[in-house]
Image 1 (cartoon, helix red, strand yellow):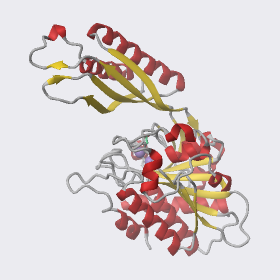
Image 2 (cartoon, helix red, strand yellow):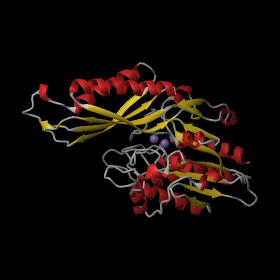
Image 3 (tube, protein in one colour):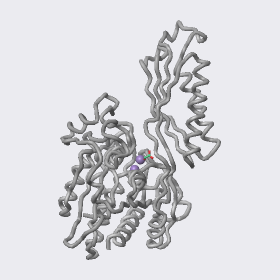
Image 4 (cartoon, helix red, strand yellow):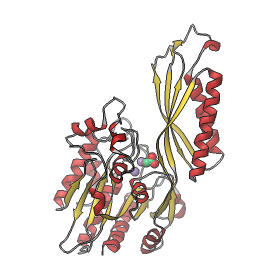
Length: 399
Ligand code: GLV
Ligand code: MN
Ligand code: MN
């Protein structure tokens, strides 16, 4: 099956007729349909599928005589709310297509070759980014994961069981078989556009984190409560958004409040509580700590003036990842000297790299750079260039 035919299979799954964006929440219907499609593709290729108790899978091509640490590629099939088609699935479909290219070339790997799918990479249902790979590597403990609930209050274990899985959270034996990991991903920026390259290699992932801000105030009547008598947590929240914007703008850092929960949520009531999530990213860990610390300091200052209170909880923090420089250089050179670029986006590849797995990433040009949006895009010629680059890379690593 060609790349284009596989892509066509996935395009309708979980797509909103209204926005064109995707809702592929982990362990819910659309993501499970993509997962079932993936397993079917693996069966059709005679791959040996191994899963773990976290919901991650690796499908192996283990020709007779192949031995040693597996060369694994892949990505994820879940999306952010109203996300794009490419973030995640491009890496999975390209992995299957690259394997087909290698087989068509008559290539037989001397090391096992695997295609991986990690669950809940976006953290859009249970809040923790790269949940599957964090659990598999032991970066997140099973005890912490068992406490996770989605927005409807469903526990992670219950969501997994409802999807027909038999969860057993924790470090995964799948990792034992992975000698190195290469994730192909749509670029989430325009570095490759500016450099005129269809494909690039990642050098680093900048440090980033997610922080929950709980603003507490006093519920009251929107009409009868004078402005002076209010203890309005929305006001403190609004001032905090502006502070974050201003603070991040001083450097090349990023600060985003993209999710908000207002209680009780009445148009004619001052809220009693506002919960908001800050996504912060920066050029260095020190800069990230300084950014978040300053936003918290300013939020606390505003709370004192507004008669509210604020508490900040770091829900997940990812330190800077510098991919294996020698491996990145070797891959880039093997591809004819493609650019090597850093990214501000998080990936399972970053989690595996931080856990000591030799890891690399390939990026495929995104003409607008837009991502985490229905407008996310990559031209088919660039996707095919990505497949060839991935096949070449896997061939060299597993040859
Ligand atoms: C993952 O896409 C992230 O960087 O949030
Ligand atoms: Mn993403
Ligand atoms: Mn992704």
